Length: 333
Image (tube, rainbow, N blue to C red):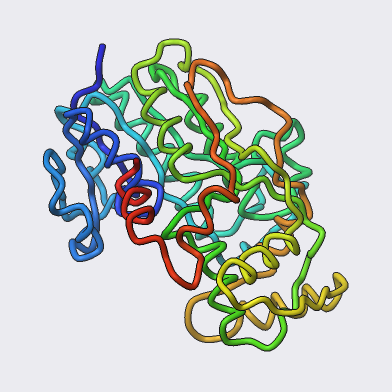
């Protein structure tokens, strides 16, 4: 059955907007809950998009939102959270708290509540956003609260009876509105040198358009049910190489000072405690201990044609932005 009315949590975000652009072009109806209607301004002109002001964590809210829907795409995630009383990964699955209250609420409890609500409302199709690395066979060995909570959250979905679920595990996602390459470019525009923790960490960035294609192509594909998919780009980079690439493309190349782990963790602690948006935390530092890469080729049923970073990033990082290319990318084309 073709899903015609789809609830998308996190629809106002970077990846959500790309998915919605594709669904709208297919003539589907999309429901996007938000606590702040203003945050969804970019979606207002799109036909078939219904913005609902609601707190997805509220009692009874998931059930109300899912009424009349055919599928749920769950994208909500956070990058930073407070540590729990017990943050020992050896406690995973026991009475301890291996990921803290914030990651626990967003990455573990919320997927469970949504999955249970979907079953109650007869919405079988559930597409869930996890993270590359969360599928490790030994969940206790995962190095960060972020990854441990992502692993626990996807397991909640997979263990829910009555769902036709699909789990996606993307690497770091790049595109015109990303908070990854754009951040490195902005920092190099104002800093004389880049002091970098975990410079040799390995990442395999994937284009936001490819991630959106994976979700949309899987939505009505029976072969994707009960499958977990890594989403990674065609090339592996070190973190240092990505920082240098962002500086070079933006016209502000800076020398990169590589920090040993002790200083890198100290830098992460300082950035974590600074006022304003958190640029990096100790938990981010811990996540980088695990290669953010995949050796798995894209599954044929997803119909993906992966885009190389070098083919996309110059259009939105360059000193003279390719306005047409950026507009096309934001529209999901």
